[in-house]
Image (cartoon, rainbow over all chains, first blue to last red; front, side, top):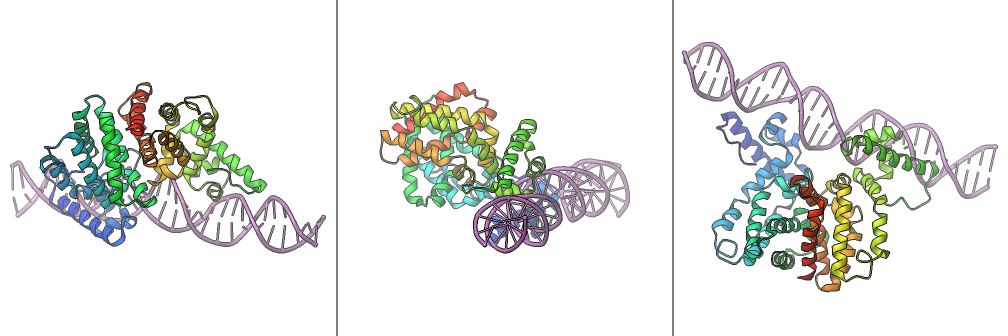
Length: 192
Length: 192
DNA sequence: CTCATATACGGACTATAGTCCGTATCCGAT
DNA sequence: ATCGGATACGGACTATAGTCCGTATATGAG
């Protein structure tokens, strides 16, 4: 959910900001459960039509909020020091990615769930899925050129918010304990 | 979504049947999109309260319908001939399971999506997830006792309806081509 | 500065899932 | 056969996402 490209009209830009600010505040105060579109519109002093012109749907707002919290990690993946950044061998980078990604998801679990929940396809066409998947695909391809894409998709499945929620909240695994175990599985998918 | 256990009152039993029958018919005529609770209630000649006494929610109805379509496969897994049934080595049974399961999901994709969609947890507490997961866990444990459960969960992630939908409907893989590729990944998770 | 038009705004409206509770029905005990 | 309490029924009600469209406003041209 990148900001619309063309020079927005001044009122539009202002309203977009208002909405995102209100969303952050609303989330802080009420949690995800309190983030209703009506409430958000009223806090942002904006009509619902305006909400939906700026964001395709509720998940779009969550996506926009997540974007801000993820820039960092993108940068570290592309230009930071190894093993997350370039310079380490594929499997090591993969393990580093798995850790960073799991920490990211777990730190924003409710928001990510919101993006995945809306439509079964939520996971795939939002929140930068193509970027993550492609990154993993490239790392997998270092080890085995064939079937890298499908293996990358399999890995992203395992790292889905729904699965992590299951492990963290339902089965009560500690993140610190979970990470190495998942890393092992993820790396084994690439290498096997 | 097993039928409630205690001897149901006669009217209750009759209504439950009516609802399921109407659901089957409605699905056949209108597809999943047309399966609304109001419409279902009216076709079944039943109030909405009755719907919700018999099924916890919309996903519960989908679950009940799926139950009927899955008994068979359960039986073949537990007592049928190998490699799906007992008698073959773990990895072979795992591959056979992956195939059977993928065929089942793909043949009932919309219905399964309905059960997974409702709440992020949909996948985990409905449609017999525990049974499938446990089966996979046992097969994995034949190969490597440690971490069998988590590996089983990872495998079930990859076989989620959302992921299969992505592969089949969005990326347009053919089921026949997809199956062996996924089998390979699944088996490698168990063995690695 | 004024005006025309593209752009954006607001909020009533629709569709749908799920809840609530007063009323009706069933059924075992007498 | 009757009766009383447990069980189940129905449908109006609530909550919420997302749509629609008549109205208002920004902005660039003249």
